[in-house]
Image (tube, rainbow, N blue to C red; front, side):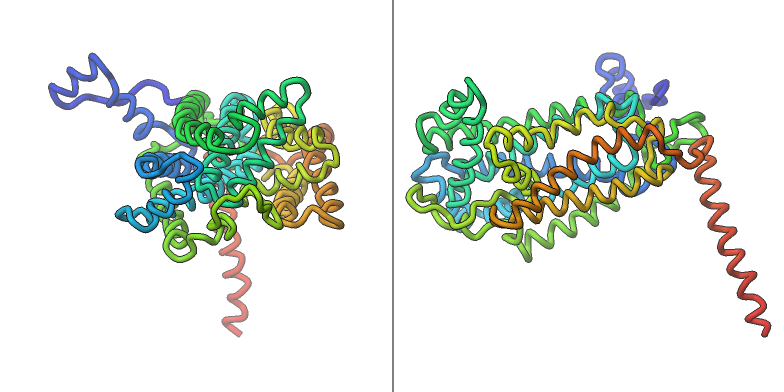
Length: 427
């Protein structure tokens, strides 16, 4: 996709370095001259936002780890110490805790953008699967991080979620004992989760490098879903065209992020987590963080414990098979009128599952969760069936033609409006 390198060293040192370690050439080819489709919209900026959030989470996490004590008798107090006694500790903790939520906001938008524009279709299957791996690692990292404050919701959340592994036949009890480090959630559990929470972000960073590598190899998708045919006409250099758009979107995202950090730092948290963990007192309603709620609703929708675990895991794993479940040859749902309606219904279902996950597991909430769970998995079946008979709209012959048509259409609409208004003006 990127073609031959256009980097030209301009000094003696840069020529010397380029002959031995072409790292500047690599950065130039990947971040300056790399050709991107000229019709990318702002939904494509969330990739850069996610990279920014990952680095922010790693940096704040490393500093917080310097002051945190992973011991069941001192963890809660050490968090209070960070908040009250460490210089700007309150800011670091709020940046880290709210950063996790902002990370998931950006990643869910990123995923839905991929679903709508068919970014999982050939030749981007591996790119998409790597994205699903990143999602799984993110969820594991976030869950373990939520346990570290050792508040009531942290302790009981860890107890409930780790107990789910006991539903697995043969190996389930062994996995639970390993995670606990004993026969209940206690100090060894906290130590294990702290170690893994510190390690996993670096694993995520490694998979992100593979994700970006795969992206640069096959090239970016675009709103039309049409592949680049003429690099000169269909693409523009990444810098400054895409860079300026990414920076603007990132600044807007940081404003939203800052609002929660400085004005609503506990809006997405739970009040019970400001109570020290007490194994003798069970909270009235145990709920995970908001970004786990749709999957939590699916878990509770299945009466059988093992069935619930399989359904919850399947809700994520099924995404990895999407390149083969969608039978349509057309990528973008802009040109798929029937599939587009099902997509927006799927968005509503996901939001509904999130709301149901926060509700008590009783009465009509359980029935609604079961209906929405069936609709969730039904979407992937529907994609396969729809692709067999749907008649898409005509695709543009190239990216450049789609841009020209949209400009021409907009100009024609404005001209028609002016002509229609002219007699009224004369009258």
